[in-house]
Length: 310
Image 1 (cartoon, rainbow, N blue to C red):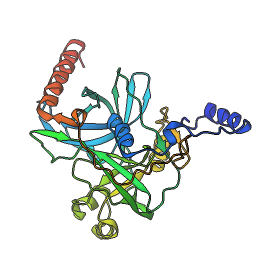
Image 2 (cartoon, rainbow, N blue to C red; image 1 turned 45 degrees about the vertical axis):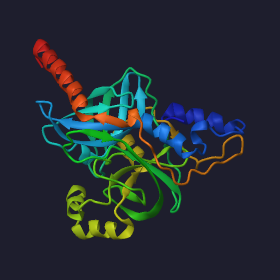
Image 3 (cartoon, rainbow, N blue to C red; image 1 turned 135 degrees about the horizontal axis):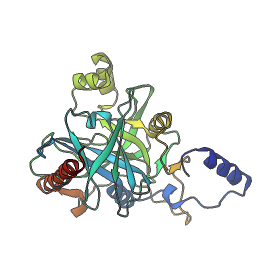
Image 4 (cartoon, one colour; image 1 turned 180 degrees about the vertical axis):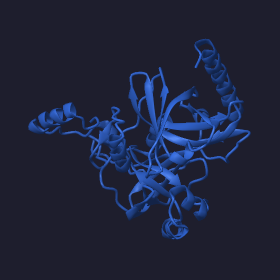
């Protein structure tokens, strides 16, 4: 189901008038941990900021949430791309590196949209907008590492449960969970047990409350209150993102689901439970190799500017 534009609403009316299907979409059915990890592996983005010399200035994570022709769309945190003087590149699951063509940060929530040109077989993740509940299983995917890694990065995929839902969001953050998190995973995926995006991760266990307070423009006491509630792992619900994206006119063809995870057609439900991810080649990044690709991109862009005068 696509973003609720006028044509989509008309189509929805026709659907409501027709008999309801007896089977849920495959993308909406409960899956095993390895199946969810496979979805996450294909759709988790590594976002790297670098200077004019091609040297890294930091990195974060993101999710591939839409594709419009040859334009791919990712969502991440605003603080991931809040790096003065930086240019950005996105690394996709096929190990290709793409220059970011546009960045759009939101004013009141720690959210940003990045776009890049893509010609491969990139399928965005499904976004699920139903009401979340404490105790339900969630998975988190992102690229941990310090601010200036010199070696490699490995994507992390962890299981946990929702521990709290704030009545009043702070900087957009509202969903707390028990998953293990590390620096560099900001902007990463929070998935339900159907492998659909339900929140954007952005605050982790090891972060200083003073840094978070400054980032979200809230009192330190408010940030400390978050830490006391759940151990400081928070994400922004995708419903918040979709609302702000619509207000900003970012009406890309998102694949949106409204129901809770459904039992598969066979009726055999395999509850995901705890899952320990074993990284493979697609989860490994040589930062030096990636920066080599970035430098090639920089050289191409600079030559293009010299030729065409901008």
